[in-house]
Image (cartoon, rainbow, N blue to C red; front, side, top):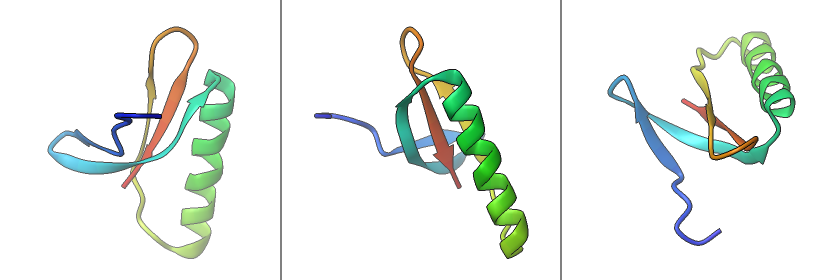
Length: 62
């Protein structure tokens, strides 16, 4: 996608785009898997799920 943002700030902290153009269920599933994976590895992680237009969602990771 041309002009796709790959970083975004939430609460003054910069997040990287992990995946976009997902359904709400897919985005939440992906976020949950990333959280579990990070917990297993012992890495602190912040994740945000945002809506983009109608029925399209993005996952952001820090």
